[in-house]
Image 1 (cartoon, rainbow, N blue to C red):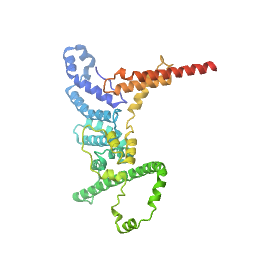
Image 2: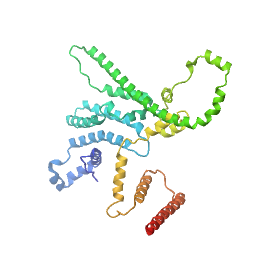
Image 3: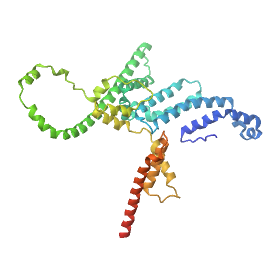
Image 4: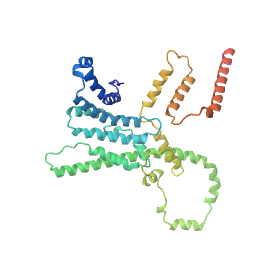
Length: 364
């Protein structure tokens, strides 16, 4: 079946063209064997040129569809992938500027204008998305620097009249390096500020918990010890490790790039080494980068609570929607017998709440 195009959803255009391309042979058979098909469509019958354009558009829009599915997923962390996908889309759109097909370039330029409206400038991207990619132990700050370099390489610079080609190239290279370093410093400084807020918040909490233990240790520390005092005067304190968790994390070697990598498990395993930074990472990585999941939840609620089932309680609607979502994302078969005890407990709780509500109504 062919998919209809929807003007407000570009991915429907991809679905329509992709399905049509797969049915190209069927279109050709209709043209050769069905007279009414030729008569009704007349000049709108797809020509070889049309099929070439369809194939070209399908390949191009397929990139966008794949990246949309990546950042819209709800079954794994996507915050640390968003920066990579945005930079790659920037590159894919910029690459088409040299395409020979004028109509194709016009279409892509319109897409590029829309893209630039939200992500065309480095400062337009939410700062937390930079933090998320830095907190990926396989990437860290080098991927941010490289991404900024790729974006700056695509910027257009105007040559001055008095400049030679060599002078122009030297000036452009200097401007690009300066832009990259400025952007990297901007992200690094902002991340240090956020980390400092987390440090103050969690160190104050831990200091309150340790206050009871401090009195016992004070008696031992306050004892005069000439040997220790002499050591402190003569020793060099420059080798004392005063680096923050963030600085230690960024200075360590990156993890090996593997296809299957559970970033939340990594931070859980390394939380003893980075107790504060791990809390910051969990908060940032939990941020959804797309509104698809929330929009889907609202549309699902409309199908559950319709005109024919408008008397469902909020608790039952929530249970139906949550159960549907859990069943959809589950990759393994569900054994009902394992959850019978939980179902019985939940049923008893519901019956007791209903009984209490009825009793309250009778007393009133």
